[in-house]
Amino acid sequence: MLRFTARNYARIAAAAVTRRVPVYAHFGITHRCNLTCKMCGIWRYGNEREELSPAELQLMAERMARLGVVQLSIGGGEPFASANLEAACSAFLGQGLNLRVLTNGIGEGNGRNVVRGQRYLDRVDRVIDLGVKNFSVSLDSLYPKRFDYICEQEGAWDEAVATMSHMSRRLSGVGGALPTINCVVSNLNLEELPDMVRFARDIGFAVSFLPIELLPDPKAGLRNWEARFIRYRPELGMPIEAAADEAHRRIDAAYGAIIAMKAAGEPILNSTPYLEASRRYLKTGRFPAEGCDAGRLYFSVAPNGQFTICHRTEQQHLHFLDPNFEEYFHSAEFERLRLMEAGGCEGCMRACWIDTSSMFRTLEGFFETAKMTLQPPSARRTAGPDVADRWARRDEISLPAELVEAAPA
Image 1 (cartoon, rainbow, N blue to C red):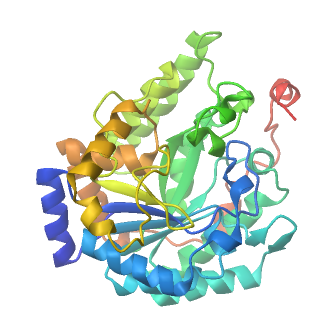
Image 2: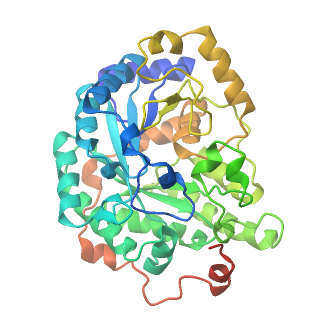
Image 3: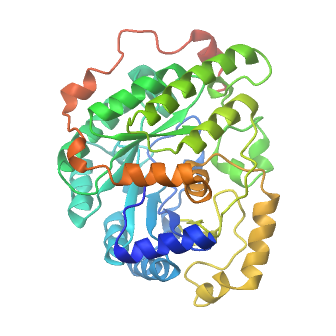
């Protein structure tokens, strides 16, 4: 979500006209993570020794500002696993970038060395005190057992929701704050989507829905760069052939409901064009056919500073901190490689990429995003843990036995 200064408005206007200003960037500050979520494999590649120093982060921030970046998301892995997160936030905010931190809300660390509780919340507070107004926290279910199953971590739901309540209180009354739930839509939670919107509203959050992407078979990760970061978990996927009619009915019911809620003003961050594309993807497995703006409107930087036009492409470009990078980025050679990569990509449903394109390619997407951005902060609620906990579905069966039994080890 974009919040603009006068300088950033000019960049947004230029991007809307030319689609050649990289207004959005994603920086994975680390691949280390304290969770091993079933749909994600990025935690396998975390290496602290490859991560950038505070001095390098400052150079990165200055370069992003010169390139025209308006909105930056710091993700991972888990960003709080990096001791340099505060330094990164200070550097990027100091260059006038709008910043969002993507966190799982469940402590910091890696593997067994996980720090939870007050130390983690103290770091959240330090980041807020530096000026970060926007966070995205992962939550895929209102069933604690189901979410713990997805995260492969007992108690994950309670910790994530406690973090959301803490953020809601700290950001109360802060102009421009829009904390958000990131919800991965899968076979396990389709029927929960409307209540996830209501839950987000009641705790003072917005919600963003991302349709799940999974490997088609257990060995696909050996054949594809992007596939290193996703996993083969068929119990989370939507049936496309077998039982397709029932699956399509469920998808249409869920997405029809949240698209109507979006039109009624509920706090759904996604644009309607993106939600419609998500519905089609879950029913058919086909990605949007519209052109890709990777490397133009948005790009990605890995923990070691390697530039890619998006997560799916191989690291064949100059390092982001290379002295010649800016000249290269504006060169005909870069555009030639970018077009080859984007043209050869099978596509994706990443909200940060596809929804940014929707914003600049469709009037509907642009005006919906502007309306959400300009919503007065006073209209948002603040809730404590007691309010959030009332939504927890602790007394119902949350995991169909046949799915758990069919799941790979």
